[in-house]
Length: 458
Image (cartoon, rainbow, N blue to C red):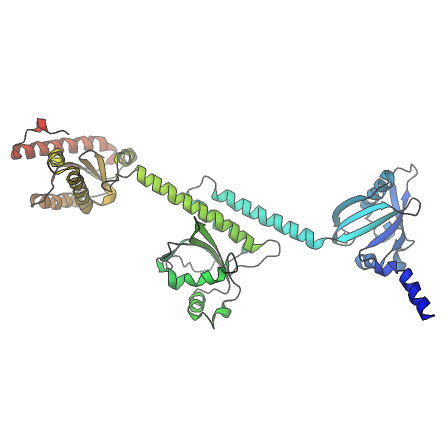
């Protein structure tokens, strides 16, 4: 008897309980034209469906669907389509009836003119998809900011401000490092949060950032969810972070040719179920790093195109740009035209290395008295000093010191002419005056030296 009962139970499964996903069979109700389903009758539901719907089997079977869900007629089109096509129909959408995202398949049932539904709750899958999409959209939006036409600093600050809208930190920042020191180069702070950028400059890398490397042994970024966890094993870092009011921290590294050059960091950020905060930081840090590397490259190229490689002062291109800029301004400006004496003779008798040394010494001398940023090599043996926003008395004092130094015994000397004007929009005229004075000084020098100027190649 027991064996027969076991055999019967094995041969007759309990479909109400055993089917692991929501399952229901409906009898569609058509309108008079038999072209549109206007209601449906529950013929069968399993336990999983009842749990999903929040009703018992007795409350559902043999009842009209619209009596249970008055606004649920969206399902009827799928019933009709499955019966007309005589094959399963698959779709997925948010069910207002169950308040879930449902992936479902409906097809003709074995009962005449009935349909069977199988449902799958895909809330987690949809949530993950939406989370990923929102994360991607945030990354795309900030990437566009970093690649727009704004100036470098404006673009970087704009990107940090935009990022703050999504992860709501107290502070966002960029730390740059050469492996020896570390400096905070960009910073965004929430209202009421004290900026730290001024205090985080030229810090010893070993003291300030070396400890972060251990977090990236098994991870692509630095994540400290609670700085109290540092207290026992890394008290120095703990004290440093505590001083800044930091409770949690996340920092994503960025690299140049495999070398660590900085971090994008967030202090006291808020985790958000709608986005993947770590993915956002990791991706944005890559583009921040690329932006910084590209900016450095452009600066280097610009510097090279505006610098005289031999002497380390500006070249003629830079001089022309500065003259054009000053012509549209109204600032006091001092001008010097200088020409290295006997450069051809030095090259001919002592070699070009000695000639190069004469040029470098002359450039350094002018830079010492007037600032390297104001000295230009106009070409050959000529240098020009353009010193904007300088008072006449200050300029004359500098000239006096230069003249005194040139009167002393120096291995290399140059002749110069100078002129100061209160208004830089007359700079072309001032340049001509200084140029004439330089040639007059040079004439006197060669006359004194007894050198035939016609033999000197200017």
